[in-house]
Image (cartoon, helix red, strand yellow):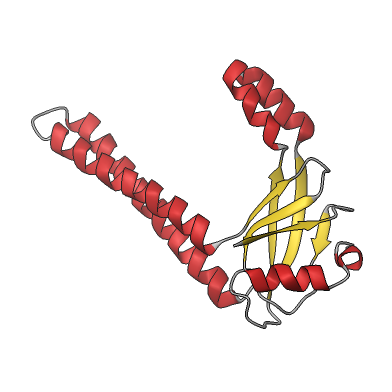
Length: 168
């Protein structure tokens, strides 16, 4: 897996290449990833003050819209597994709620089953995210960094003129 740094000139960044960001295969399909990001140092504030962390997050948060080449098959594969993890997590939560509501001899069994399902859902969701999707964060120079990309995509970005790609 490789990381790619893009100059962040605007809220919308378009990477106009024909190499899939995750599989490295040629593609003309694109996916728009939207989200917010904050500098990584903000998380240190969580140790000292939740209010300070929330305030710093609100003040430094930046929105991004990143259009990248991403085969729909690879994107859908990640998305289906993400929804499965959420469904399993809600099921585990339902078992835990049932254990609280039952409040009898079955409570321990329901709570145990709920915790196992919930833990499995979290592990599956994190593993799916790390393996099948890309991440986005900001580096110290305020550039957008795409992490967990395919090495072929990273090479294609480095070979192309990055400056024109980052303008939207």
